[in-house]
Length: 62
Image 1: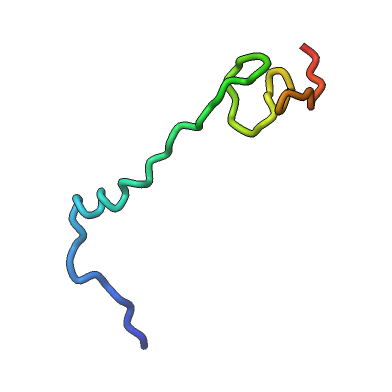
Image 2: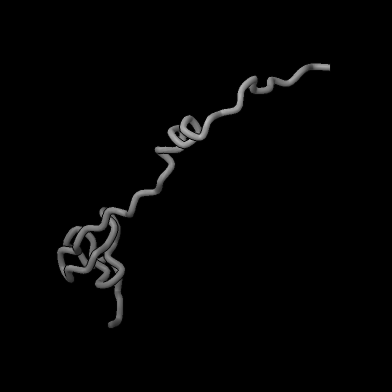
């Protein structure tokens, strides 16, 4: 039977938490729409007015 590797020493809280320091989620980066000035994700069709790069892409009935 093959032996499985087992840690010899217990991982300290400081080492464990410093390893997890990069796991936090960041807030989405929102930019104002050029037409309606509502906040939207960059490089995405505006869900409020339906424009993208200065063109009307979606027909949204307000």
